[in-house]
Length: 344
Length: 291
Image (spheres, rainbow over the protein chains, first blue to last red):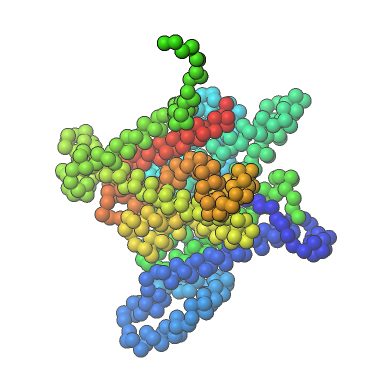
């Protein structure tokens, strides 16, 4: 989402404009805008922690198998839980800012270590799913728009509607039934063959095979979003004067599509990609749990079941940071594609 | 009769009739309406078609569909009637869908209206809060809320509403920003109408149509969220839910895949009907948009 950027002292921005290229100033502004959002999320996770029944000391004492009241009171003092609420909030926020999420009493490790182990799998799943959804979505959308109201368009649009309505967990089970149980082509879960000990390209191939079904399950619903938006967007752009001019000059339909329509039609789709990233990350909870992938999503589910609030808050914060970074990147991409945006 | 014939113009058809005529032109939307009606009827007649508790044993475990007429769609591994589960599940899905959507729309309208109407620092603060909610992955937030509040159906419904209000809020805000300086609002303001009355009586009725259409999307997403929670076993265990049935069916997927497939098809059709109805309403409200 690109918002009009206003304000700043004029002198200052003049000076900055001399020193830095406009895209860098634009990037800095966007980063500054993310700061209040991150602070709000820090406050939000703190409030959620306070709302949850039981605190760190309860967890610790439960872990030790009970303790006397005096010892518990001393522990509370040690952990700063007897401090006023705003002091606790401040301490919590300074810790979050250094990615210190506290101790996980389930995994007996710092939460940040647990999260770090799981991050790669989730990022890999996000990358494969979004690339698939985006590339196939825009391709099908463009084809449907060029043949609007034909049989091809009807088939593509109907498929889009059905994908949109199919919950990822149901799709996952049906794929498992077909490809793992009946046909035996794909592994049923996990990120790699447990006793495989593959190395090099064998390992890559093994992981890729394990990712086929999770990727398909997670991407189909978003594929349908991109497809529908791209179809509407291409149809709108194709009506514009500059496209008619290009056609009058004798540009072929393919050239028209690739060189003239695509770039402008992609803009709303890229906006949606940025906006929806957090929803896709949320969707990974279900998919990772079904396919037992060791990622942040399945960790979130286990943390809820095991009431591991520190880990859960760590996941919320880490996911939010990832979303902010991805939104920042899509904004830059948007600014690169649409030269009409004023950067300064 | 001595009166001269006066040729009166035929009365303008009412807005509802015009709406229905436009809606009817879209065949897919009609199909959606039919499915939607069927789901509503299932929810209403659940107690008549399958009296008794849908979670109690109704026949031999894992009876295949169309074998025993007492349980026409078969039974699951605990001998529960799948047909009864589908009917009672329709109740839960619709209930959660409608109430969660109401919660989301009410929060969205209040935040969006204040933000769009007042602008300035109010807008800044409320939009940063909206962005914070949009940044946190909504399913993860939903899981957290359920972990804190517990798995009662009331709390689940409220939690789904709380994670779904951001898109409606942004829509309402955009509508309010474009409407707040129109002449009719200025006229009312000059008559001394209060801000509250301007927001709710003057601007809101004009901003509602696109939001009502979008409500169909929120409802579809709410049903998907509830079924995903129930699938993971985090739903209310006291009610039959389609998502939960699929989750249970996972254990017997190898041989008795119908246990998961039947409720799955129910979800797909229900969500599909919402999108089709929403699209139909959109076309009927904006007749110029489509060729």
